[in-house]
Image 1 (tube, rainbow, N blue to C red):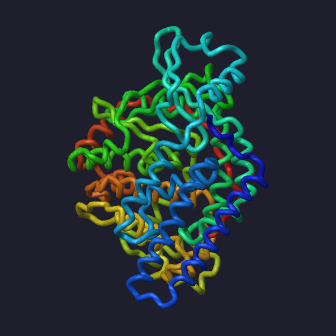
Image 2 (tube, one colour; image 1 turned 135 degrees about the horizontal axis):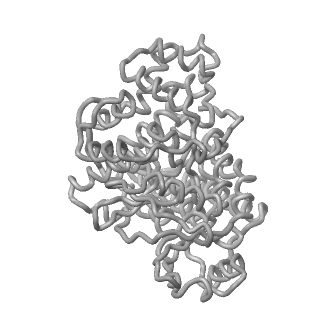
Image 3 (cartoon, one colour; image 1 turned 180 degrees about the vertical axis):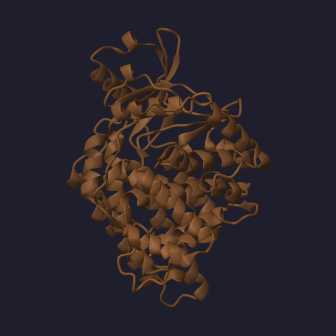
Amino acid sequence: MAKELPTSRLARGTKLGMAVAGNAIRAQKTRRSMRGRSEAVRARMAEESIIRSTEQMVMVLGTMKGVAMKLGQMLSVLDLDLVPPEHRERFQRRLAVLRDSAPSVSFETMAAVIEEDYGKPLSEVFAEFESEPIAAASIGQVYRATLHDGRVVAVKVQYPGVDAAVRADLKNLAMFRRILQSAMPWVTPAVLDELRLNLESELDYVAEATTQARIAKVFAGHPFIFVPDTMPELSTQRVLVSEYFPGKGFEEIRQLPAAERDRIGEIIYRFYVGSLFTFNEFCGDPHPGNLLLGADGRVAFLDFGLYNLMDPEHVQFEATCIRAAAEERAEDLRDLMIARGVIDDEDEITPEECLEYVLAACEWALIDQDLTITPELASGAFVLAVDPRASEFSEMKQQNLPPEHLFSRRADFLTFGMLGQLEATGNWHRIAREWLYGDAPVTELGRAHHEWLAGRPKPDPATAPAKKTRKRTAKA
């Protein structure tokens, strides 16, 4: 029988507190038992202590779901310096559990959620409904079903009580930071604040169904990107019904030959990063559980709870800054950031530090040559940019990054992390020049994409989505 999800702030905070205390006691015992041992034995015991602590962290994140689960999914994309190198593959496999196969809730429990939202039995809505979930995510499970008209659909259902769990997690952010600090010191107040600002929107499946239907229309007829359409009339606050797309998951994709992984890597890059500069909107939640490779070579992108519209002026600012960095115009870059309010103490930030900070985060896309993205390369850039243990750019890390830019930077880093997991190779700069400089495409996928763009009907301004506004700022 499935265990109930703890939803109260006290219960969830206590669970986190027990994990924190357990790690502290374990560390003390390990230090005491190290006395009198050889250097080699001490090193091995310290290593084992770290592994036990990080594995306990995975267990806590996985069983709690909610915000903790989302942090675990982010972590699973990046091979951060959590454990010794020889143990990282095993730890990465454990993290993949958070990403791809979260602890399941019984079908009877999930069916009750659907019937409660619909106010009618499952059989009145679906001709067939498979009882085994085909996927699991941070706040719900996905099932395959068939409508009475014969259409096969994917039905995403929220875990019962997860809305209360997420809100309890949001109140416990300080505790989250304490439990994760030893393994993830980059979980700064800015990261947690950004999660708080955005995660609650994932609970609204009605809004997500509407967003996904709109994005499906945007990418209709695309040669290699597919977004399943939704059935808003069948979607509720806790149930989202969309087209079913059969395909290979990320772990299968990772086993493909290099040329195929390179192709899929370019598609991922174009969708998660290129969409911002092409359509002024982007998915803020890139991770391997949100895509499938179809038999026809198309890549389906799933989960639009954190799909954000960005003010074109802000998009232009990002493009202008990236161009300045690519051209090593340090003075111009610093002036842009001062004018935008990113740098609030110009006397402490030199043009060179400003340039090096930006390059540390995105230089992989500014180098005009073929580059293989490795997990170490992706996580190294991430740690350098945000980890307070890294002394580089310490003043830049204290500056004010507007939330919309913090959110898009997270999307960039997680995309980079996905490419690292694929070990994809490409001239990412030549691809990016399409949206940064308006250059003609140099890849086969780029030419197909631009041919599709040229044939698209012009969007109707009257149907454009409302802008999301964010008034808060966070430390970079």
